[in-house]
Length: 536
Ligand code: ADP
Image (cartoon, rainbow, N blue to C red):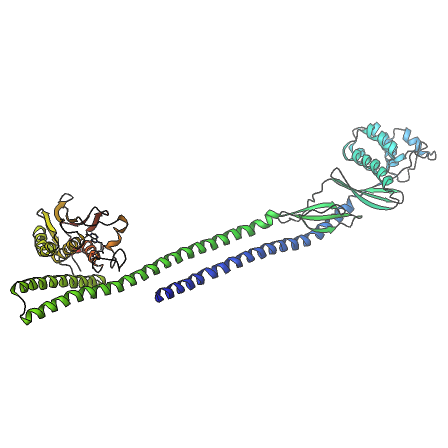
């Protein structure tokens, strides 16, 4: 009991020694996974913070180049002084008209319209297909034209696209400047997804259009990042991980947006592997522990069975030796009646036979265990061998009121005759031991499987054996039930020896039995053995 307690305690320690490090590993893995994720985010943030100002600087440069200024004209227009230049406007000299259009000092006509724009329109009227003039006019109209003339010119020249859009924006901006009460300074506005920068200074109005909030940037951004322009006054949203002011006017910034799934995906993939491997290790450890538990339990059981075996053997030896000695002493003293003396001789012979079977069993068991058993396979008349054995067992059976019957067909096989006899003795001994009086035990020998094998079986009318014990009774030292309540004596090696003998002959031993239905033990062995199998 004490040994068992110590055994299970050490097993518990072992379990703990395996499971604890694995659990610690699991916790470490979880903590590691967390910090891995944090590190991935920290890296992404750092990269974003490096990128945002660079993008902002590049954008500042681009914006600086694309700013458009619009001169604000009074509305309605103020008439200018008459000048000889007005003559050119009415003429058809395209060269003179061109000079006038390009002259920054062309001034305002008496109608209050810039002569440069009027010259451009005149050229257009005279020579419609002159694309260079159209291009110059586009610039002039946005920079210098008053609203009335711009409308007129746009209609006449059928200029669309950017020129018209810009000009229309100008009107809006004028209204917005008024609305904002913006005397001096600048402001960014986002209208219909377009950024408009309004600068109102010294009676002038400037604006920049950025048609897309996404910043198409030369430098390649990491796949998880997106750069966007935004009004600094708008809420940034959770995906923004870095911002940088754009120093063109005020209130515009570059934002770096992070795609969470792209940042986390590689870390998650790694974690999946890590946890899968951890799971596999845990499962392996669990299986290994279960196997270890089972092995140790079996070893312990075997140890217990072995000590029981030693106790049973010494008991089995002591009892016949004691009775032989008693009877021999009585015979020696010569005080025994002749009838009793005969009986004593018979009993001494019987106990002697029992002892020799027992000692033979124990010795053979030891030899087989240590691989020292030598088998002598020779052709043998098995019917004769079985008949001899039955004759030897007859007195024992008769003594217990049991009839031994047999059905022996002639079988010739190559076997170790002593071993087969030993197997049959054990089967018969068990049958006699377990059979109630006035029953019969039938020994059968017959060829089987087209004469390739033979069957030697012993059938009794004993208590039978439940199915779940069928395999176990052939294990060494195994004896079912409670040792103290066991009625029959034995050592638990008889059937394991029979099994070893069967296996040495490349055959099998099986049992057909059920509680209350008796038992039949069947040895099935090959008739001829190859030479190679006749070794030890
Ligand atoms: P032992 O007979 O010394 O106990 P064995 O190995 O010969 O050991 O048998 C193992 C167990 O098998 C026996 O203890 C008994 O419970 C069971 N057994 C063997 N033969 C019979 C039989 N003919 N009828 C019922 N039980 C049997």
